[in-house]
Image (tube, rainbow, N blue to C red; front, side, top):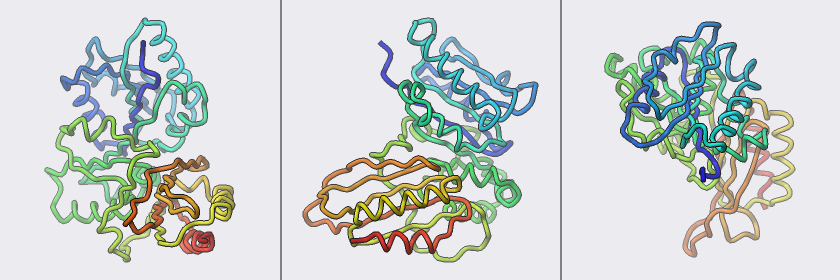
Length: 325
């Protein structure tokens, strides 16, 4: 019997960042996995699927009548549903799905597909958003293109490419900027798509039980050298939250700022609970699960990272402070 949910990886990154190179690397690897690839290109004539390594273990579906995050979102649901039907009927076999978005895509609506459609949510598990950034052109792309910033903001893992031809000081400036924009996503260097599969697949970036990852350098740095629309900030407190007040405040935030809240995730110290509460959300969708028990000698604390577009940092932090017991 097929497994209950098929893990899905969203592979994104701006034009020319190396997505197809990485995808070829994954398909060539002797891993024994059967992968269905959903390939999205912007325009009437697709070319990337012709560049992909093909074997009997891959199913490649091309979508080329628009950007996957807008005009063809209905097609994405239809294709995922069709793949599920054929898999359950035994006419095709695959262990996981990789969606390669066009370089102009906002990955947020793609990720939401796996939460908003019940049939898709039952059949598939969104594993992670992997974002590739070109070390040579990435800094300028972040300056000039909103899509590049959003792709970084949504990342569960950032892979920096073309470091072999980028000056060391250029790479360092870009690295510092990426960490400040998204401190929860580990950043790795990739040469010609040669990334270990453990860095790309089965990393459970969207799993509520995963640990919150914040770069310690980000926590020690308070200055910014640029004005990105996508930025991040962290709330921290050793006082417990009042559950009712926190729920009311967060609901209000979602109503006003939800479309610009790209990713948010944290561990909460709740009044009256001997367990951590693991909390996360994407845009208007927010959820929380009980985490591990607090250790007897552990100093209890809340820590939440917010990543979004032009979010009012002081309003968020002051509001959360008012929710403390």
